[in-house]
Length: 131
Image (cartoon, rainbow, N blue to C red; front, top):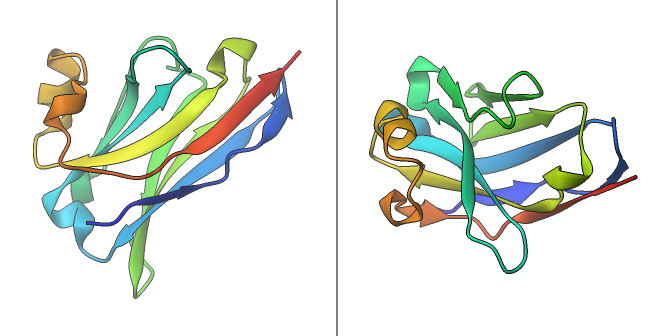
């Protein structure tokens, strides 16, 4: 499964940004998609998950109320998972990755979004939030 992120940019604090994760058609029938982020020198952190075609969504506390994960399953050739980020803060600066796993978002949330549980990764897209 090839995942391709896009939408990263430089934005001022308080601003908004929408990231996209493009996946082959029917990916969400078999996989949950999780957004991770990583600051240079630190571990990759899972922040949000969407559970396949059911569309159930999950967030860690640090982004809850500011970030929204959603999916678009209507295109003929691909599916897209979005991460709408609002009220961005400087500590949201990171490289953002999407990942696919056959495990459920419920399990991933309960176990703290372990990177070893992911089956496929994209290459990431950089987000920089300036003051």
